[in-house]
Image (cartoon, rainbow, N blue to C red; front, side, top):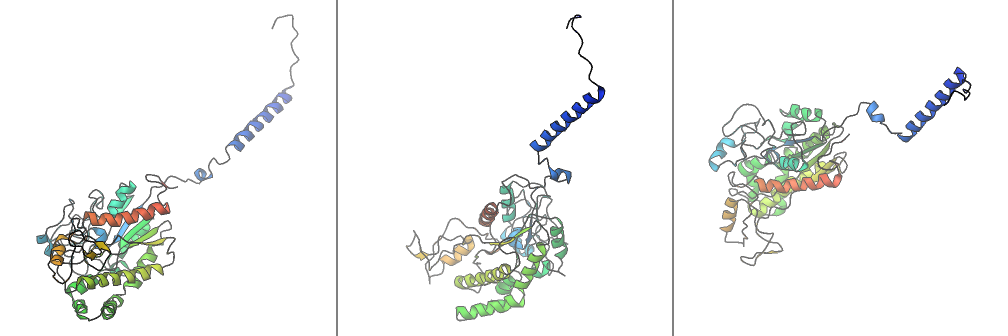
Length: 372
C-alpha cells in the first residue's frame, strides 16, 4: 500500500462485533454437529471396568488333591487332607496355602491359585487373560455343602462378599457333598445292595432329597444373581469310579447321574436360566467298559472309550474278569484319593467347556478387552 492510495473508511465498531459473533456461532455449530457423541458417558463419570470372575463351591472347583506349589498330594497325605468336621477349611486344595493336617479357619492363597493353573476356574481365567485379585478369585472350599453356602451357613458371608464384588461371571460345582461321603463311607453305601436300577435310583434319591440338594443349590444361585452384571455357570460332575467302593462301575454311573439330574432340575427352574444362569458339563470321563460304540484296539470289545479313570481305578477295573475293559494311557483323575478328583488334565476338560460358553455368549467382548 502506497501513500497515494486513499484509506478505506473505518467500519463502525458495532458492525465488527456483530460479524465476529456470527462467525463464532457458525464455527461452534459445525464443531458440535461433527462430533455429536462426545460422550455423554464421560460427563457421567464412566470409566473402563475390568472383567471380574469369581469361583465358589466344593472340591471339584477348589482343586482338591493339589498343594499350594501345584504338586499333587501323595496317597500318604490323604488321611490328613480329608476335609475336617462340619466346617471344612480347604486344606490340600489348589487355591489354599494349607497342606496336610492343617487346622483352623479357611484361608486362600494370595492369588487364589491362579498361578498354579490347576483348577478349572484358574485354567479358564488364564485363558481369558485375567490377572490380579480384582479380576479373579477362587473361593471354593473342598468338602463344602450347599447348606454351608446358603443363608445361615458358615460360608454364607463369603457368598455375600462375592456378590459385593459385582462380578461378571461366577462359576461353581456344588451339590455332591455330603452325599458322596454318605455313599462311599456312610449308610448310603447300603444302596449298593439294591437289585435293580430303579430301586438303586430310588435309594439314591432319598438321600439327595433328604439333603435338600436342589432347593439349596437354587438358593445359592439366586443370591448370586443379586450382583447385577453377574452370569452364573454351574458345572455338572464328572464320572469317577473309585478304586475302593461297594458300588459297581455301572452303579457309580447311576450315582453320578442322579447327582447331576438333581442339580440340573434345580438350575433349570431358576429365574434367569438361559440368560444369566447356565449349565455346562465336561466330556464323559470314559470308564473303559461296555456297552459302547468304541472298538477297543487291545481286545476288540465295544466300550464307551479308552479309560480316563485314575491309574489305580484302571488297575481294579482290569482285574475284573466278568467284563471286557479297555485301558487308557491318559487318566483324567488322580490316584491319591482312590480315584475321585480330576487331575490337571481332567480339570482342563471342565475349563474347555466353560471357555466355549463364555466365548459363545460374548461376555468378554474379546480376550483382554474391558467392558464399560
